[in-house]
Image (cartoon, rainbow, N blue to C red; front, side, top):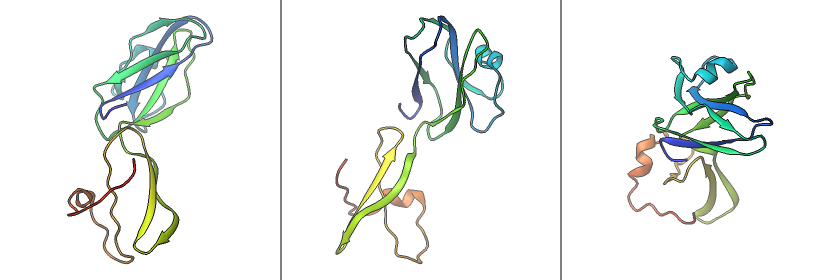
Length: 148
């Protein structure tokens, strides 16, 4: 995945046409026919309808998506079967930052899991202070990051 694309993999049980579509996050769940049509106000991107082999995985790339945006993804078959909703985003965190281990002096470890490979920076504010806005994390003079 990148900031404006996402790759999904589907594996059908029988050989038939499959299409996947990215919908506006929180939109009403479409039926299989709407997914196969790949059109509508809530559709933000759709793969071509593709004939695939039973049991063979197919990777589908959605490009032209909006960075920092959440989507609902559905896939469907020409036979009228629709998948459950799959939530995805073009960036952001899969797991929110969390301190782990034991703090030693003025240091502690933070772990995060991001949705895509991207640069992140964390800032620490004293308890009771006004939280900094998002842009402040990029403007911290002398900020040091370790690890990957």
